[in-house]
Image 1 (cartoon, rainbow, N blue to C red):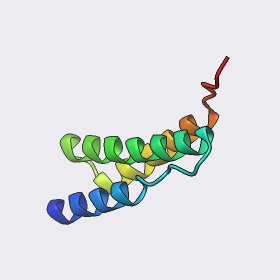
Image 2 (image 1 turned 60 degrees about the horizontal axis):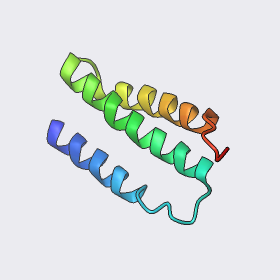
Image 3 (image 1 turned 120 degrees about the horizontal axis):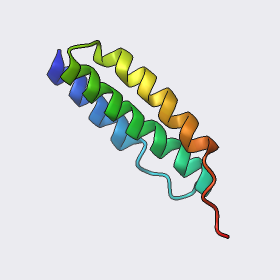
Image 4 (image 1 turned 90 degrees about the horizontal axis):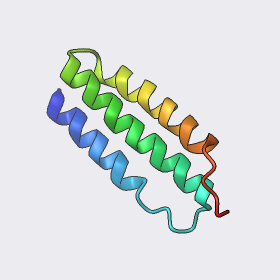
Length: 74
């Protein structure tokens, strides 16, 4: 179960790595989501909780923070 889960997370992360044609906001959104999924899954595995739920919550949170954050050039 754990090995299959980690392979799935790695495949999803690699599939999201091609973001060269995106705007800065889109890149932050995708990156925030990917980091959130990985972090949430890791916390779920380490803490003994459901890693899928952790990945879902972390991904949603990371995506929202990435989309709402504005670090534009000033």
